[in-house]
Length: 209
Ligand code: TMP
Image (cartoon, rainbow, N blue to C red; front, side, top):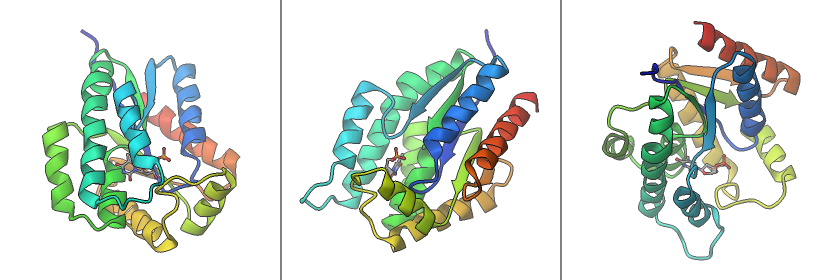
């Protein structure tokens, strides 16, 4: 029976370079011979990807915060139970582009949903499962938004105002401060080479440590 793999999540506001750094982490794991799965939230299975489309599509109809919250956790339940947990149980590491910290940051910090409400759904959907390590790529909201805008059309979240993303970022930073053993803040405002080097060295440390 293989040892359970490790569950690593990548978080941050818009335009922090998560996708690029997930690839850096993946290459590092390849070099060290660690079998792993790369996935993302919301999404990661065909059904959860359909829910992602529902969530991200800009629409005229106002989306109630509870609808948004439940859809995030519906997608997560499907993804966690049918893809993430089987991979971890098979001994693979899982690199996930966002997870429940994003719900605390976006629906909690950004939309103002009480933290206790999110924690209840976290318990319902995940039981005791939490990421082993959270890699928080942190950059000022201004820099992140400039980068996100350069990528082209904005999704429903990217269309939010600066104040929304300030709350999102503050929530991430607060959570990282509360659990320094599990959260690793990386300054994503540095050069791409430096951010990539920081991520590679963090991942190497986690494999060897
Ligand atoms: P992405 O653009 O990083 O792939 O993420 C899609 C959007 O979904 C992003 O704007 C953040 C948002 N999101 C939440 O609001 N709550 C969540 O729980 C997750 C996973 C993502």
